[in-house]
Image (cartoon, rainbow, N blue to C red; front, side, top):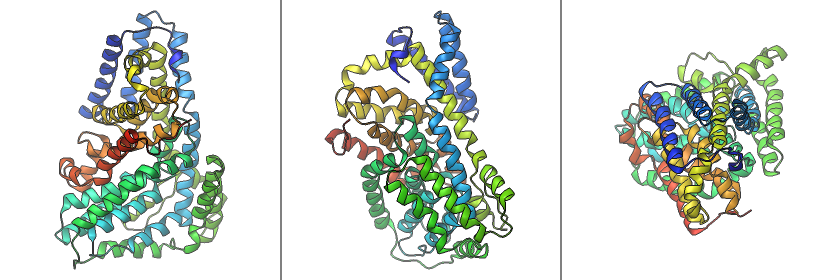
Length: 459
């Protein structure tokens, strides 16, 4: 989407009023009525269509704006298909279960908060879902913390920090793929560039959780032991199951295209699955790739943790991406984004102010709308052209979208992630926020890099 697509000129006042009306309406429906984001976005599209017609913009031009916006997300849609198949095949081959098993080996009573942070980070990277990590292992850790008489808010902060670190850095995470595809940056180049801000945030969080952790504790760890024993009994823990991960890592380092890299990860895991799973055949494989991995272990946490993946599981994300990009296309076509960006264009040529504006926008959308996907999509589309005009590589923008978009939503009490995490962990958002160190540090560090110019890549 480009600014020059605008076919009418609006005043800044018109643009800001329309923007506040749209974002306020979407926020109200999501927060008040707990609506999925799709319907509010469709209603926002209807509103823009009506406004465009009042401004005598032809229906054909309005439709073309929507189509052009949606077309820009087709690359992300294709990646999502492959991500869904990768997750289900890695579950069936034991790749992800093996990572989970060895991560649980680290859990003991010593330096508890620190260990929880590291383990949830590893699991988050393995499964690419912060909410699934928190809703499964996170709940188990909360039970252990209660038994040890440790602080539940600090434990929740460690779980959320680790889960969102993993979500942010995982190549199979939908938000990671969304951020890279929104501004057309290679997935693995995006992940590599994120390390400059993410690793410092991780290390500082690690130190803080280590400082807060008790030196030792004695209590029962039956829940953790049960999870480990169940994984082994299901015959899903094998050292050779890590091979698909090594294949994917090697190709990523060699900068092979994302589609080829993901395909290799899928194919290698499917070959392994024939040795891991009994009665695995071509018909089962087809169902696995589309519907995801299903398991009935008798342990609810394991069933929820492993029962994921498949192309079908990505439909929610893909449909939201297309609708949000269609909305973005209309915002550009009608001239709303043109008017807003022109109003602040005098400041955007300076890198520190450009980074500050991007961070503020991503955080603001999270608090206003309560939805992390929209914070990534709308901010990415709004600042793509300013970053180019400032001579900055777009991987800087995709990194900021994660630093100030992905990890902020769990800090919003009325946000999708905030509401979910507060419910499953049993700790109010306002109580765990001070201890969600990784989420708090990420935007601060990205602002530091922006103001100092450290690791800000030029075109």
